[in-house]
Image (cartoon, rainbow, N blue to C red; front, side, top):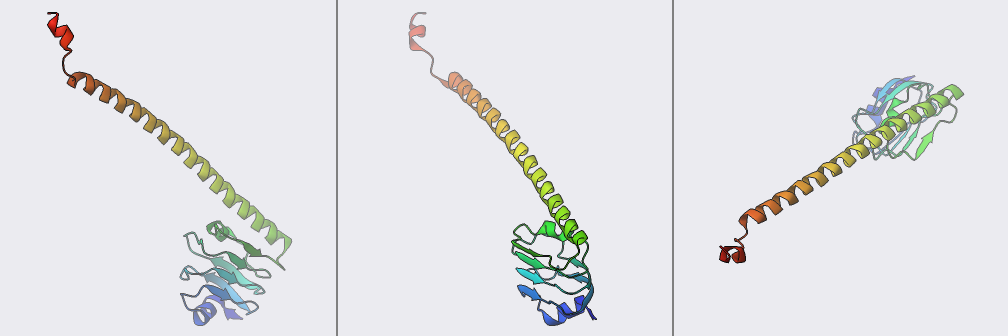
Length: 158
């Protein structure tokens, strides 16, 4: 058995874009937050690999991840993968697969709620802009009336 963190740090430079460590008998916790350029991570067939962290920031470039046959049971890191195209779960228990699906659904529900909130804020801003434009036109009209030359025909009639 090999400590997962030590193995990855010894075999992959921090600037790498791919980590392929399938069937390496990795065990324990693996933190990949120091690997910002990742586009692919494959950690399958490492039954004693118990958890994975990608850090708190979204990973838009990470599009493929595989951890089939691993011992990973917590999948919240999937929420930080907005462009995930490939997720490999082969040889994981049905319970693990179901949890992955639940975690993904939860992440998308949160994103949908955020999008809806942003849409509401945009609508409010548009209404405020429209109100300000109306006020601006009223001020411009008022200024025009105050600064216009006196009507000569009404002056002559006096």
